[in-house]
Image (cartoon, rainbow, N blue to C red):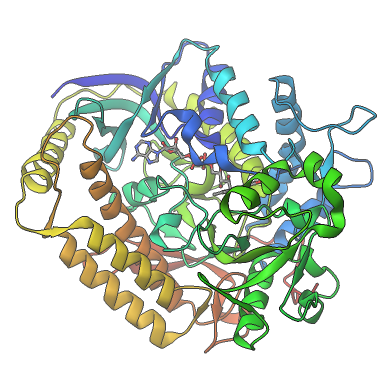
Length: 569
Ligand SMILES: Cc1cc2nc3c(=O)[nH]c(=O)nc-3n(C[C@H](O)[C@H](O)[C@H](O)COP(=O)(O)OP(=O)(O)OC[C@H]3O[C@@H](n4cnc5c(N)ncnc54)[C@H](O)[C@@H]3O)c2cc1C
């Protein structure tokens, strides 16, 4: 098997991965950095972000206010030291991005515009109409092109981490175009592989968000933290799961039930449509359950009403929302309300890291949605994620650049070589050659349905026990699965089977962690334990991989200045 060598290997070419790569080469003038991405970097999920990125940029705002909003939004599960660092760095990252050329929307006086976002007490979300992800990712991607020490492996799929004596020394990766498996050795690896939303049936997440990096770390013995904290976004198109950005409510949109009533007055009267996502998603389901929803071809829904904003404002501030409503529902939001319902959107949990992005396994770091640093706790505020990718991507890149300066280059000897050969056998002699097994698509569908039904917005012991049983059963079925395409060249069937295998690990960690947390906090809503329980659960869940279901450990939450209080809006 051929092997390649770099100082640092970043898995992921989205916002977190590119920011980490740029930070590493800027920190140290000699390093060779590899960015491996299973899709061309501009196709990473970051590209689809719509609403904006949060940072304190106005005189009426303050770092403490951004920190408090984030911590309260997290239902006090966020580590407050990571939130404080985040809010302090956020304005620098925003200015840096602007200097690199990000075309933010601007006010007439030339300042970057800011808009309201859910759970934020003032307007602090910077935006580029409603296509921030495209512009932000483009800016990072083009900046990365300046550095010839950043080597890209586009459309390469990482299948495993190679470890030696409690240290990571590289990865195995398939060049999807040829189907050849390579070993890429590195002194350090940064996981920036994004979320795992595809574990669920109804999600805003792209097909590629399959939790690969979370599973890679989990398999290497690193715990997954707070995986039970799954964010549902309140406004997805019922037929497709396509997101209608929170910016639509930030710009003044209403949520209405079938009686034409702005029902959020019953749930968060102080914030109305700009309450946090967990509360709004639950409110929508309650309206539907109590008979005040609409019934349509694709199930129950409520409506997002933008009519009062007028055509001009919609066109100027929300052109993408207009385009999506026209193309996917056949309506013009200036004249008709948009049907919406909640769906999976974001994974607060992820690979456990400390504030420097370090996972505890020598040489292994993580950043972005794949990681849990943890600044989102039990519920992320919209528009904090892109900024998190920048802030903590940069932290990981810089920390790793310093770390590798003192590390020897790994050699292609054992045990790494042996592990790579075993991986080759597992994929090509095992999965690819296996005949007469079950098709992976049926396993995937059953996983997504099972997670949606048993591990969704409202949970209880019975549903979660059933969720655990389903996942264990699916894991067994996975060992007897078959891919139809037996060729090596551009075998997307094989890649999606490997992705499904990763997703089952994420689904397991989510379900078991949710079952063990017998309280309700943020996005984790247990109907059998409706109250938050700070005495027993003001702590992070750490799920360690184990053959008979994960082993749970817990870690105290870091509290700096904000004592937990009741979360009312
Ligand atoms: C529709 C939508 C709208 C959003 N809008 C906003 C918003 O307005 N504001 C906000 O703050 N947040 C928003 N979010 C959330 C935010 O966009 C994401 O959390 C963030 O972009 C994640 O970035 P990332 O770099 O961590 O991962 P991603 O952008 O998902 O990138 C992951 C990278 O990892 C690579 N990868 C994964 N697995 C492998 C593997 N096995 N081998 C090789 N490469 C691999 C992929 O190719 C990709 O390059 C939105 C999310 C969605 C889905």
